[in-house]
Image 1 (cartoon, helix red, strand yellow):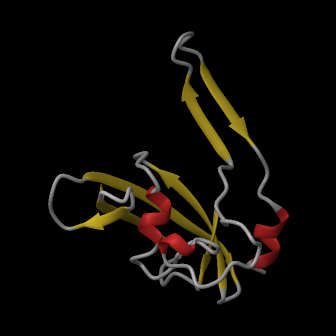
Image 2 (cartoon, helix red, strand yellow):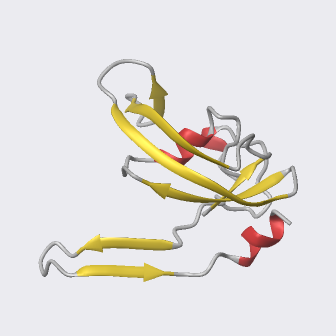
Length: 126
C-alpha cells in the first residue's frame, strides 16, 4: 500500500522498467545497461486529487522498486524526498507492507503475514 502525490492517469496499470544502482547506492530506472527487470502492478483505491491510495503488487522484488518506479510516472510516494516527493504529510514514508508471503528457508513452510492499512493512509486520500 502506498500514498502517492497526485492522481495517476490510469486507475490501474503495469509498470515494467529496468533498475540499476549507482556508486552512491541510489537505485534508478535505466534504459540500457546491466540493470534488472522490475515489474509492479498498481490499482487506485481512492484519491482526492492531491493524494492517492494505491494497492501495489510486486511481480519482482528489487531494491526500492516501488519508490523508484513511482517517481518517473510523476507520482512519488508521499514523504519520499529521496525519490522525488515534494510533501511529507504524515512525517513518514507513506509506504506500507500490508501482506507478506514467503517460504521459510529452513522448514520450507509458507509463511503469511497481513496487517490493516494505517488510518493515516486512508484519511489522507479521502
